[in-house]
Image (cartoon, rainbow, N blue to C red):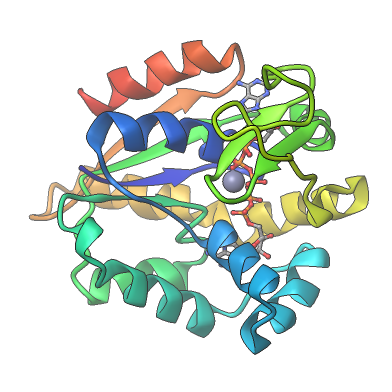
Length: 218
Ligand code: AP5
Ligand code: ZN
């Protein structure tokens, strides 16, 4: 299974990615998680990316495309992969097409903007695993601790209300165009065209998981 999860910031890409990667035994390639790991390591690229991310803007296409192409060389991608938060621009999508990176499904998770700020303000994450929680909608078993490792959960620096609003603007201006990009490609029936599936992302996390699984087997 080779798929792309598309959706606004906070649509639940990371949450659903955790279910999908288990089911299909494929790695989650989250460019956001990769950038946050680089920030934590204190690399030069990480430090430069942090400024851009804290402003709610996109990191340059060259850096992102380089990161993903490198990641795809790893042995664990042989069985498939799940892109989360990538591609985010037409240039990134074109780069994958040009490199012949195969995609079976594009899954859009649709959530209206007015639900997003509340989701972000309550988000807590476990950076080492990519697991995501919400204080109200998807709470961990023990407050502030990851269910599996018991390690501390953290709040993301870019989850402040003003930054979330900026990220939503950037999504509408630069990323939303990919809904049409992949939708049209899917309809074209060209060899290698992916299937395009859209699910509603509002409702209990487990219900959305079932919608996602159904969409990916249709
Ligand atoms: P990235 O990390 O990709 O963030 P994002 O796309 O903005 O998405 P989020 O991770 O915020 O949301 P999500 O859809 O994963 O939702 P989640 O499951 O966590 O990118 C961060 C930054 O890195 C970008 O702004 C950019 O600067 C840079 N970057 C990354 N990739 C890039 C690229 N390709 N090109 C350029 N720059 C790039 O859920 C959110 C919350 O809601 C959680 O608390 C969760 O528990 C809760 N929740 C989930 N599902 C539900 C539900 N059904 N009901 C209620 N609450 C729910
Ligand atoms: Zn995410």
